[in-house]
Image (cartoon, rainbow, N blue to C red; front, side):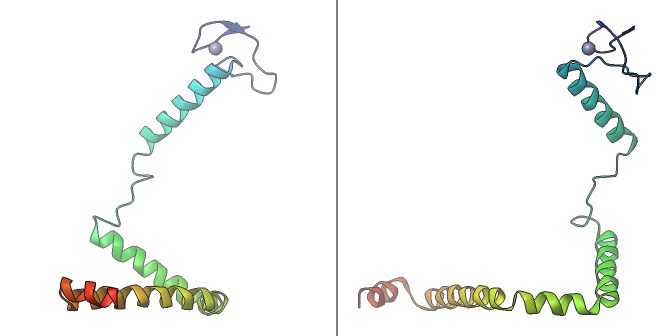
Length: 119
Ligand SMILES: [Zn+2]
């Protein structure tokens, strides 16, 4: 018999985990998991830091890695482009439609746009 480190109640540890510190109650197990994650995050403070947006040397390193990956897998990008050829074309068609419309609206003053729309 042991005492749960979270709720303090007595429990029998699993025979597979003799050093079990928390009882089987779902609340205690969640709390134990939360504490483990918290401890791990404290021990590894930089693990989830994504510095690409702020650190230019890190960003360059990532770019270099991507470049190297593309060099070592030359066919992958070609395969990808081939596989999504139609999707890319459709996307570019829509994009250019929007782009032209935007360009047209900027070039024309407001009164002319409404005139054209009514025709
Ligand atoms: Zn407990």
